[in-house]
Length: 425
Ligand code: GDP
Image (cartoon, rainbow, N blue to C red; front, side, top):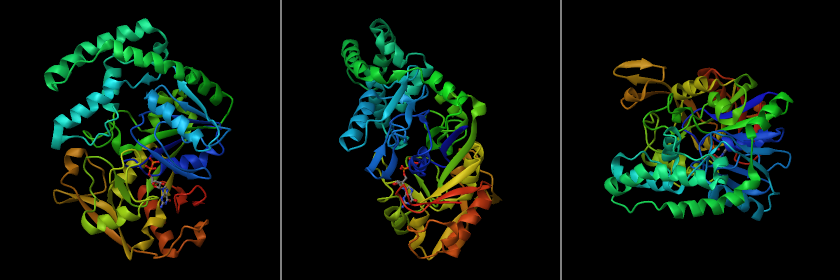
């Protein structure tokens, strides 16, 4: 079987965790290929409700090997704590492997993320303060630390000493804080490495062998297209590419092997963090949707922050699917809209007097206004429906309209947060 990518078509939080959990049933490997513990995938299954931050969504299946690829930011305490929590809640010990080439998210990355957001004040990016931007910045500056290097104390000391030179100038001069102490961080890392050791391996070879042997591999993106540093809403992206195309790099699988790309989108829009969001709802209408969205309202799985919500955006999602190279799509949270008499869908943007269906650069998004088509609501609970034909006509029309606009076949329709609440078309 080829590699399947499960990725977000929008701003993140599309329900990828649920779709990956559902598809992981038949997988041998589930792989995270970018980001760190800065976002959460909510999964509700026979073990209970979980918010996974760093662990791949295959951890609930004993047949799945769960891989953190070279592109991931490995926060070791967060990883170990998630691993322990799962078992304390009755999940069988999952098989988790961490790439020896992945880099370690270091304590000063978290510190700098928080200090910079504080310094920026009203201009802040809405970072989750998990250290992701400083982590990837250090990686590019070649002052990061690969997981394998943790096991050579001399390298750890030398690399950190090099990194701390410039970091300490910033700490003292820009942020007015005390400098980092090398020995403290080294001691912390040495303690952690022993616990991480059993998970560490050459995951690139593992996955290359798996692909060659025809095993089923799922690669799981974090966030979505619009948070991509190149194709998203710069300067409000995340710091690594959430695109399926990047999975080849961040997971270490051949590009040709990723033949199936499942773009996940919600039946409305939601967005955590700052940046332009054309269909955003404010006031009571927004609060009404936020309260009913997801499994317990639209609040961030990692941060608990209220998510910004809005109507479905065909312009952004069509672009999102296309840039992902989606071969099929999954739409989640259709049940949430069951309370509405009428459901607006954004079909175009009006920018400087012109109507367009092209998703523009961020500079033009701020002034964009949504053009809506309004659909009648179905006003029923669809949570128990398991076949497309049994959905109310109006719900089917809504899905088919979106399918046409986003130009991607909608293969799965999720009608509730639980694993079994899904319709396959
Ligand atoms: P991810 O990061 O893309 O996995 O998305 P999140 O887990 O952050 O957010 C998706 C939210 O929607 C979570 O609260 C899920 O439990 C919830 N969810 C997923 N699918 C459905 C669905 O079909 N209906 C409802 N009501 N909630 C869903």
